[in-house]
Image (cartoon, rainbow, N blue to C red; front, side, top):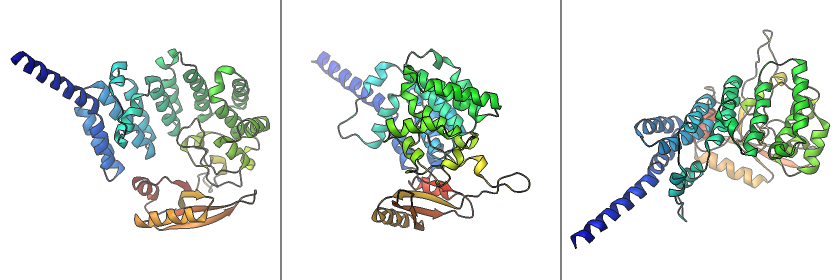
Length: 361
């Protein structure tokens, strides 16, 4: 009887340990989500990372912190967090041990999705956020790491694309620019670059108004965010990376009717295009006088949806208004905006309150 009892107790302890190990990172993520501000969330996560011993749990917390930092436009910090996470090992057994419940909570889904990220993907996340910070050399250093040994064709395709983007961030000569154009055109026809072909074509259009690339996007990928940007049916959303990319040819006039466009989420591979340097008015010292006038919080085809967002913003203490914009197609869109405040931190306030927003200059 004693042996059976001991066996039972041991089994219960093992089950408890397994459950505890599975949820070690879930609780801190849950607590971080409850923080009122981005700053509080990051501070809390930093403390949790310091006292977390298991590399797998520490890796999860670093990735989650990086995502919070990226949402808050803290791209340098996000890049470092992604890189640190990529350097922490996690076994397949640890990944398989986490079973997502049927009625999973948000924090459980977050941890589950983070666990599925490989080290190579995390390095690419570090590259993306480095490019958003204008840190092209840092991005190149990540690309020259062990990630090059990856046998994943999609990873290799992104490496090649990101190398081109890193080069575009720096000062390049006319010959170097033409070499990049030649390389991108070659990439657009390579089978092993198929996974990033839309991004390659969009880059060609964006930097040099390539009519062939534009036609392929419209004909072969009509539903893609990139095609919507090329046709002028979607608005460009400012993403820092594109502030550092020189735009040549007639590409500027091709989208001069647009204001701010969202091409598809946060992934730079589904390119988010920014208002570029050459579009900014300059003062006598050659420096930009551009200032953020307001934050765009939503773009809708139906006015009632825009009005609903205005009410939700009002409940959170924001004063929003609706602007109408008629496109060349004849369609009317309703844009919800919030004026910038004197402190210049309205964007951060909106994001902290849970609203995505994009600056209008």
